[in-house]
Every structure is written in structure tokens, then in C-alpha cells.
Image (cartoon, rainbow, N blue to C red):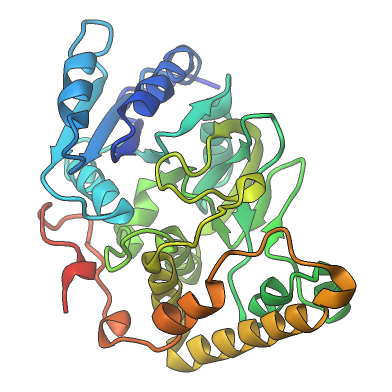
Length: 346
């Protein structure tokens, strides 16, 4: 593949109190600049207030970094989508904006050829709005990377934890897998490359989400506009799940309850994409599945992947919609950066 020009690709890494992970992540990108082309990196500090911004600024001011790594410190912790938007707005409003923007988690290590594989996938598919890497656990095990949208049927299967029952009912699984590039409904935000043209058409992350489901909603929007989402298994990225959020996933399932904002984000997603009726249908389906799981517990034993307090947290934070859930907070590519995130509105 021909090398990209400096303006073709920018990588955005949002930090929140994970400065050491960011430094390791950027270290893993050094070799990629030789193969994929001389891209730039913007490290956004989301109001860490723990010295991270100062540490990162000092580190990347060194000569080997200062011509391609920029630190953008923000005064508030506005959430994942909002922080990414602050960098993307600045990039898209340049006289020569990058053709592609890669959103990358700080708790990742990019494996050789991963960036090139994503760029090749984009260049081969003009309607690809986003492509993502295959995520690996630190021990090399596969982690979830590409998915189908949440539906009431899939929420029922998630609640009961019986994948075979879902197959019997004709409900396609949430996880999308493959050894060659394949389309999916939505892609993990841990390592996803966006086409700037798609972001200009559909808008950026809805900053009414603090954390979680923001990439799902964005790709729902992109899909409605005719853009495609592709999983690229040849791009491999190690993900230390939960290092940035404190909530693990995959083989590293959390042993403590999920935070309230995860349930609030799920609630907002269903309202924004299908209305209140869709939210109630999903919640009732999940509760029915959970009831089935509890009823079958004497035969199956306790579920190893059960999240503590999930029923009570869903009922408290994820069941009843709020007025703000129905309000979009999606910045256009050409609007000024810096406005308050939508999730802070009453």
C-alpha cells in the first residue's frame, strides 16, 4: 500500500488518569508510522486533575515525539465521546483535514501492521464509514470487537445467558466473528478508524452519553445514512480491558457492579434509536430472560458472567426514560469546539 501523507490520518487517544498506558500505547505506534505513513497523534487529557496532563505534555515534548504527538488538555471530564469530539472538531476544521481519524483507547498496544490493515480496508471499500481492529486479551485470547445492534430479542438472550436458546428462537447472536473482513452493525470504540466524510455527513459522537453506547449510537446513525461498518481481523490490537474505565469486559468480567452511567447510557441508546416503546420492550425482554436464568439456576448453577446488582441497577437507572434521553446532542463537524457536553444538561 502506498504510504499515506501526513494529512491522511490522525489518531486520537483520550486519557483519563492513565498516563503510563498512553505512553506505552504511543510507543507501539512508532513502527506503524514507518509502514502506514507519517500520521499524527493527538492525546486528549479529559480533565484528569492528577498530573496526567503535565506528565504527558512533558514526555511528548521530547524531540522524538514533538513533531507528531500533540497533547490537548481539557479542563473537564466530559466523557469519552465529548473528549474525542474536541480533537475531531479541531482536525476536521483544518484547511487540509485528515481523510481518516482513528479513535484508539489508551489501554491498547497496537500490533505490527494493524494501522496499515485498517487503511487498506478503508481504501478498498468507498462506503466504509468505520473499520475496527480485532481486539485481543493480554494473554492472546480473542475479545469482542464487532457486534449486531441490541434488540429486545438479544436482550432476552443476554438476560438468560442461553445462547443456544437464542439460536433455537432464530435470534442472531450479538457478537460478529470472522477470519476475513466482514460487515457488522457496530464496532468497538477501542480501536476504530472513521472516514472523515462519514463524520461530516452524520455528525460526531452524541455527547449526551457520558461513557458507553456512544459508538453504538453513532454507527446506528451512520448505517441509516448508508455507510458500512467493517470488522478487519487482520488488524490486531491488545486491549487491557477496563484499565481506562475500571469496568472489565470479555474474559475480564467485572466483579463489582457496573456504574450507574452504563445503565443510563443503555437507556439513552434505546430511546434515541427506537423511542420509549423500544426501551420498555428491551427492558421487559431482559427481565424475562433474567427471570428464566434464575428459575433454571438449580439445574444450571450460577452464571459465571453475572454482573452484581444488575437487576436493581437496571430498575433504578435504566428502566424509566428521562426527558433528556430524547434530545440529541450531536455536534456538526464545523461547529466551535468547547461547548458543554449534553449529559450535563437537566
